Image 1 (tube, rainbow, N blue to C red):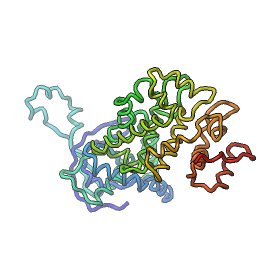
Image 2 (image 1 turned 90 degrees about the vertical axis):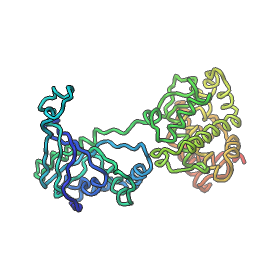
Image 3 (image 1 turned 30 degrees about the horizontal axis):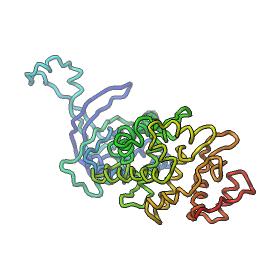
Image 4 (image 1 turned 60 degrees about the horizontal axis):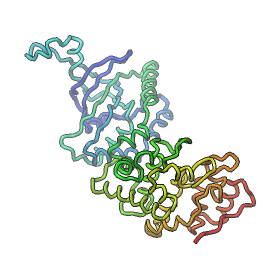
Length: 419
């Protein structure tokens, strides 16, 4: 492992014990982290196995994290877990805290507690490598390399554990590496929608629910997936699907604020831009309601149950009342905005059929033999609908082959075009 040009450093730290691990939780600024901490290539003696770990460090992710560090005032990271090897790290506990303090709150602090406070001294000749937080480390390194304008530098919590290059030591460190990475779980989609203050789509979903009548109360199903509960008879779609619809709108529609999904998820826009995203989302559903009669009935109803049961159920119903159908129509409309305004795109999409028992939905989205939704033919269905509008990216022969194969009907013909 290549060592940076580093000298001795004293880190304020806590000493702790969990299981048979002794660890030190210290504070280190991101410049020192970038200089001193490397990636977890040392836990395997085999270079190919080490390379497998390195390949997981995707460049795009480090760029996203770097942008987050540079642009988000409310940035925050979990602790990095760093293994130490070699050198001579030393621990210096604080002592005499009671004798120097007249505060009564500290008079009963026991010796074990006092002994857990102190400084971890790193000489600079030890090897440090990240066991948990390698993508964050990659983002930190990129940020420092690009030039850091912070004053003072961000400080991160770093948990240090000892590593030995013996067979047993390597096994022990590998086990910790996999334990940390196996037990880590990404934040759920539901939590993001409910709580995230950086994710543009999540913020706009909440605003649509809280600030408009279109998705108030039972008009939206509070389900984080795209699976609408069978017994739901009041909601147009789920909050998970609404999030996906806004993602399609904000990343694929031809409008001034179009951005990559990762940027919209990680970096909170200005309040002014957030308002513009929300207005665009609200306008989308408002114009849908003005052009699609079934949606006008839903948005205009005091009690939506009659509209929903008419448009969704075992009989099939309307594609727009299924999460997959709303997603597909949004993709179609977003595609059309490359050639026309949002209002014109929605008006043209209204020319398309929506009954699930008719072509092209039968067998591509609606299994007529089991009366259930099919999710595996979304691309062919979308392109067939776009073909009906004269906008498919596929040649007619290619699309026909896909259509026949996926409907299971070798004699099927593409539906008639509507424009």
